[in-house]
Length: 378
Image (cartoon, rainbow, N blue to C red; front, side, top):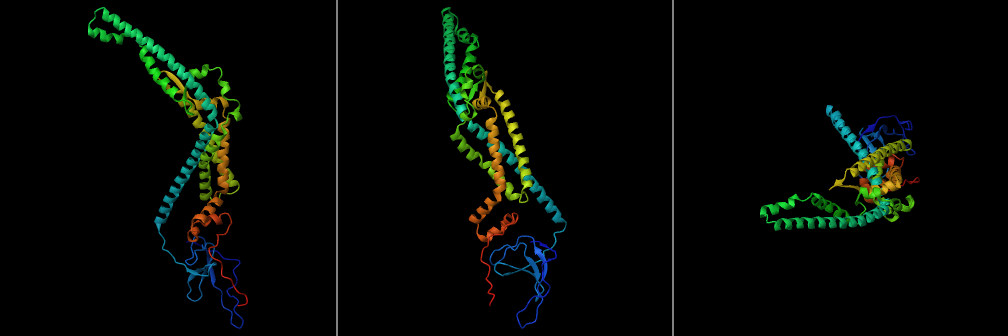
């Protein structure tokens, strides 16, 4: 607990009215104001901003609870010496690291929520591309099987011809190794095409890039941005992904009580700009990763990237806008939601530790007990 020594301009003179027929007595001297958190031992009321007075009989410092009238005595504590600054520096450095980690987590929440939600919006287009490519993969796999069967038949014919010529067993066994390397290459490609055919209509399937470039009807997969959106999948995905910026916004609202009005708006703009940069970096990185996927001579790319290629960046921009608005909403009303949660989950005596959530918005702590009624006629 700390006290703030400051004169009280509203303090009355050192004399207070006494009952009729008695001599006036001096009012307790107001020494300071409680600027920290101190809980009343009787009712649990937080004595923050109450006057510290010097009791007239024992000349001791005390604070009287305005709720129940209980007197709380004050104590002086020894100074920590040079270790106070050292501990304060460590705590300040730790708090700075926590804030930097929170900035990174908020950026990640905006980026992750935007990417996940934008992919959900284009699930219908992605699925159509995957289904069309799965049919092509089945056809390509059948063609490879025919070629492999033809090469194997030629190889068997060659082996039988060598056997009829009376060559020894060692030469006959070495003959298959002298066949053209097309059979080994086709066998490896068959594994890739079989895997792509088994993906079916998976939203995250990989497709052959050469097939996509040669496809003349790829524009039919997307019938405009709004008609291409899978609204049902998008709704539930937005609900799940939106929890990330909401949680980040509540964190900033609770840990930064001085952010109000313009300060809060500036902080939101900075966090949003960091999110925009993160989304741009994630998009470029994904394009680079997609262009590097080569398996058994087949250049592959993800169907989700192709769906975004058809519809542009509209889905990503819309998802980022929704995530940013959710962040702003949580930063604006996060303390109110936290106060509701504290009142619903914590008992009255434990609420006083979070009293700053009320004071920073100019609100009074919820009363735990009713103040004693004074009978003016008594």
